[in-house]
Length: 194
Length: 203
Image (cartoon, rainbow over all chains, first blue to last red; front, top):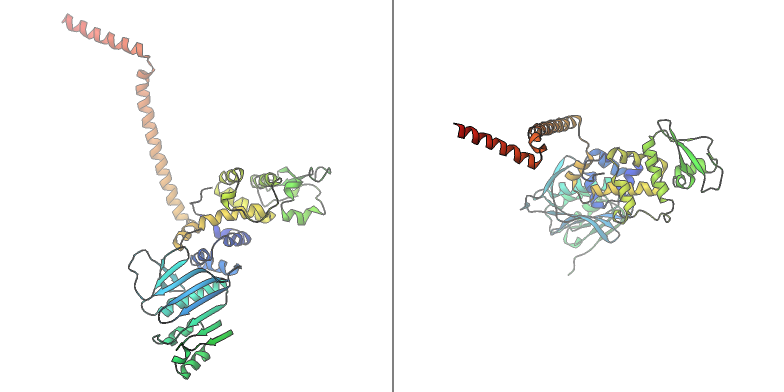
């Protein structure tokens, strides 16, 4: 059988699809879940053993989402504030939001979002949460971020929340974060190094 | 069940969707967990009906089971590159329809080894691809696309037929000359030249 032709993958029995998906990496599963609503539903209904958490890091220098298997990063999606200088990117529509994705390696992606990066991060995090059903770990440093409150809707509920440089924002601001984020297991507020 | 001899020699009759029956050895059939759960302990009177699958598919599935009877115990899926030559031939000689039928039958019969090899093969089609490329793989062509493809193929076939006809015509024309042996050809040309020479000298 030729391996280059189209194949009625979605018409196979569920157990066969599950078996096929277990042969794919988490990056490939994410790509497959982005193909159509049906493929997303299928990926949602399959258990993905091995993966442990989704990690979001947001500070003034970096913004990225990582899918982890223990300590190993399976796939990483970083957000850049600059427009892509290349034309090799692709434009995917996730939950009606169009995002430009540049694949840098097997499991390394970049999203360009010069304005409102929170929208791109939110759709991507929501999509991954739907597909993989993993707990969310958030590393958040509001100090230095312009209007940090806009990032809070990305993680209204998370498993672990680590807030850095918490002494550099006011008590009211800190309280605002505590009031707007439900932490299921652990919340830590670290002070900046002096 | 046909013969009550020793368990390795026991043959079972399998009935396909066409109503045809054929023999499968007990050892091969025991690779199917579905069979083990349904018939192994209670036995079967008469042919075992697997009537959702056609004879060709069932024979293909049990051909694999018969082959892997003597292999070592199954210890999880092997990488495609580790498959034996026989395994590769087994998969390569199937067309897509047969391959899908085999996956379905193997899934129903719960033959772990065959199902996982088939699935690994499909996973290879998706591996390393991005969303757009995956869409191309998993999306089946619509009826219109199929029709357009068929038209193109028909056109190609017609063009090829025309070319073949033309080639046949030219071959027919040259055939008379080609059929003559070389010596005869030389003789006829010589005769022609002599006739020309004679007519010229008579003038």
